[in-house]
Image (cartoon, rainbow, N blue to C red; front, side, top):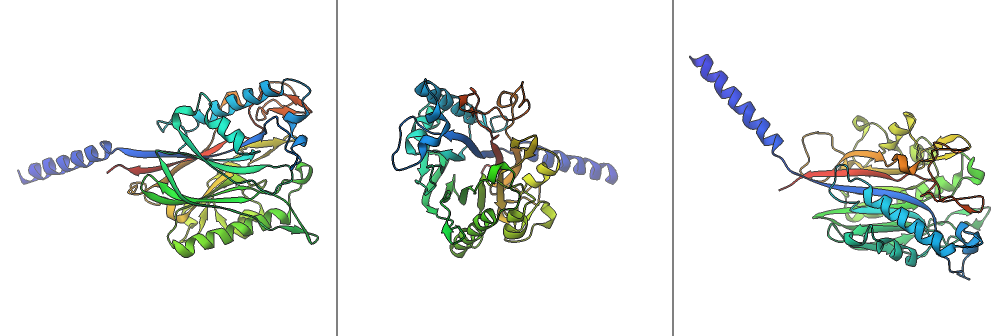
Length: 350
C-alpha cells in the first residue's frame, strides 16, 4: 500500500512539474544585423565621394531603382526572425547606408511602417560616406545613450578614413543592454586575409567594451557587424579572444556562435567561389545560457543566418551567391551581396 501511495505521489509531482514547464510563456526578441549593400540615395553630396556608389553610376531610372531597393530591403527585414518571434527584429544594425534620409525612407516603407522603428545614426568619416546605423522598435527598446567611436586607424602614419563603431545603450523591455555596430575595413580586392587594419578595429572594440564594463561590470553586450573577417581570423581569436564553445566561456569572455556555423560551411557572402562568414553577432558571457532551463532574464536561445531562397541567386555564373543589387554598373534587381544574421533572446514572462 505504501509503495502504491509513493508511486501515486511521485507521478503526481512529475505531472505537476511537466505541466509547469509546458505552461511557461516566453518573451522572445530578435536581434539582427544586415549589410544592405550600398543603400545610397540619388542626390549627389558634394562633401563625399558618393558619386562612386553603384546607383549614381546608372544611366537612367535611378529613382525607380532606389525605391525598388528600399522596398526589397524593408520586405526582407520584416521577415527576419518571424518563424519564432511574433514580429520583425526588435533591434537591427545596418551597414553600407549613406545617410539619415535613406534610413527614414526604409522605416517609412509599407513593410516596416507599422513597426514604428526609431533610428540611431551618425555620419562617419568614410570617404564614400558609408555609415553604420541602428534601427529599433520603440515599443521594445528604449535607448538612453549612444556614441560613435572613430577607430583611429593609421597606415604608414596616414589616417584611414573608415566607418565609425556605434555604441548604443538602452533597455530591451526592462533589461539594460549595450550594442556595438561595426563595419570594419574591407579586404583589398576581396582577397586580403591578413590585415592589421581589422585587428586595430577589433582593438577599438575592446576599448569600448572596457568603457562599458567600467560603469556596468556585469554588462550584457552584443557586438554585431560586417567584420570583413571570418570568425577564425586573428581579429577575433587573438584580439577579441572569442570562444566558440559554451563550455569554454568564462566570465567577461565573448562567445561567437558563428564560428561553429563557419566551420560547418555556412556563409553570409561569397567572392570568387570562396565562401565567407563576415557578418556575425557576438555576445558577452552574461547573455550566454549555460542552464537550458534558466531563462529568468534575457539569454541567447539560438543564432542563425537569414539565407532564405528568395535572397539567393538561382542562375548564371553566381548561382548560389547572395542575390545582390548591383554588379558591373547595372542593377541586378536583387537585395544585397550579404545575408542578414540574427539571434533570438529569450526569457520567461513574469
